[in-house]
Image 1: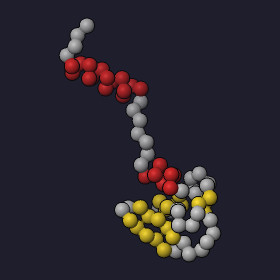
Image 2 (image 1 turned 90 degrees about the vertical axis):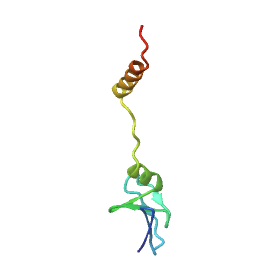
Image 3 (image 1 turned 120 degrees about the vertical axis):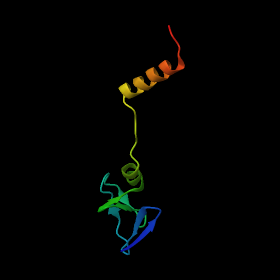
Image 4 (image 1 turned 90 degrees about the horizontal axis):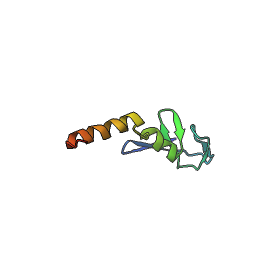
Length: 77
């Protein structure tokens, strides 16, 4: 098995032509299209989700930021 590392992306190239399954979503992956994160073999979409998780504000964080913006503008009722 040969590993190629390009810009912190580890892409595994196996010499065998056996399809593998993603450790997260269990999708069959073509040879040469799999990515590895530590000891897991991942599909491209799962790899992106693991390396760059989505960040979302909660309702209270969103409400607090709107209130702070309103108070900074100096508007009064």
